[in-house]
Image 1 (cartoon, rainbow, N blue to C red):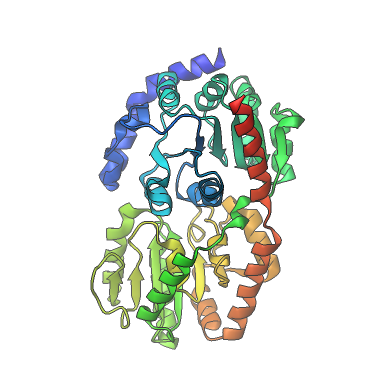
Image 2: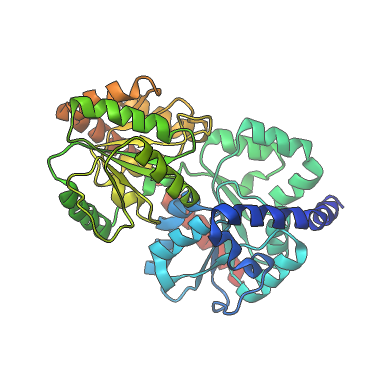
Length: 424
């Protein structure tokens, strides 16, 4: 009954959902394309009996990439479908895998949209990344005989309390999962309190630590760094949000007074902000170049604006120091492990609640420094002038990565079991 009422409410709210989609399309035009896919309508379909991986956006796609890559390499005859909710996630899937996977937008959580989607995809098992739990998506998939795995699952105390308040709806959903592979014991305990049976729970650690850089990414980073200037100090501000760019440009201006050859690679999180950030740089009277520009003298610019999709890992590989955005404003930060994989010293602001555990591990190891808008310029100057300190922090970052690997193997074992169960 609770899910029926939820579905009716979702149908009633669909006009508002579409209005929100139209509003987002004003800033990011890609949202106006392929809308039919969000209702389960699409032309081509993958062969039946494959693996369906749902990764809502860029961060989840990057986290799922080693998993997807494993099945493409080790099980080349297994069709893989990847769904996302955002255009940036879609672009990331295409950049990583091209035509090796079947990609569409995930359907809205209405019974008919989910039903159409499942009839076209006909998966043998489904993997939902992290905390993207939609009642109809989970329950209808499980009811169709498809085992559903919640992978790299996180559940904060606040979110758990919300699920408890909606227990009539959430508990049947949680019990519908074939397996929930949680990041930490605390996450598993909260899922258990929501009614998940012990046999359906596993603890793996975070698969984000299993990130592996490909040789093509390393080569592209080396080539770009050479064009930027191998000897100049370079720092990157990755995944920045509105309200941060002004602060980071001000920090860069202070840095230039001490290190006039310094270069900032500024990468906004959302593509709809590329043009507005370009105007901010112009207003600061700094010489800059957009990464998307086909020509330009990259060796003499003060700022490189990262306005392309799917290149963040390569751009990180060009830097000597990485600042992780979403942390100088109360957004909760982003994943620092992509910078750690390059062996970079890492800076963040104090708002890191989305990745508190990862930040704590890196900070305790001496790989990460938390700072604020007033101090970041001084911290940057100190780090960029001290190669020994950078190397020490970078080595610590790599050690944290290596010391926490292994979650991927646990997750793959659970997905293999789901695939075997779905084939029965």
